[in-house]
Image (tube, rainbow, N blue to C red; front, side):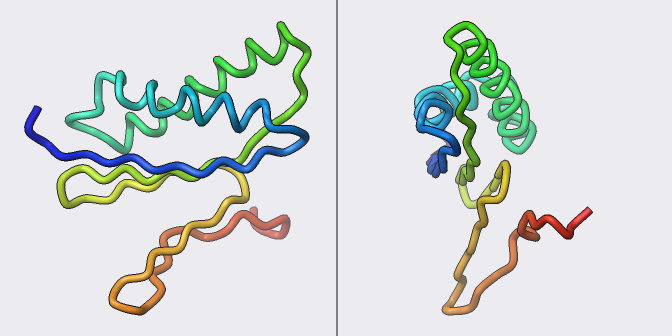
Length: 111
């Protein structure tokens, strides 16, 4: 289609690098192939995080892997920014020199 898109992601492995590497290899593919990528990029991100998690869990069980990962993604579609994150990763947007809060960080005391 004619829409410019850009995708960026950071994964922080916990207990090893297997889950982070798997996510880095597969999440963007799942996002790009998701049926809602054009009309609902936020839903495509959410579903793709879930699908990638399910895919890795299957692999981890089969290969007895025990790592995990946090993840942060930024998907720019035209002039809109879509952010998705999982775990305790944090996101900071700086706009004209000022920090803009995009999410509340995951902390143990938060419900």
